[in-house]
Amino acid sequence: MTDPGESAAQAAVGIRRGSLLISVDDAAKLLGIGRTHCFRLVLDGQILSVRLGRRRLVVRAALDDFITSLCDRDECESRP
Image (cartoon, rainbow, N blue to C red):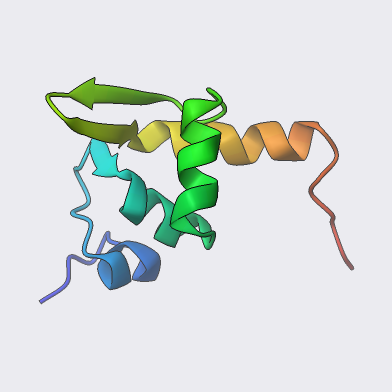
């Protein structure tokens, strides 16, 4: 059963609503990009992440910041 506050993308990837950290794989799925491209963005510092043990995890709120930064660089298009 899905949480009513959960987005379809989160449900499809299997991310719980309150998750603060997500895997790079899940971040890539949410962004609709490949795993390798997402790792490159993380390692370049364009998407904030943390290392816990051997795992690299993306800060969930950083995905919104990343998308906003793309829009600030005029990479977002508004279409009528």
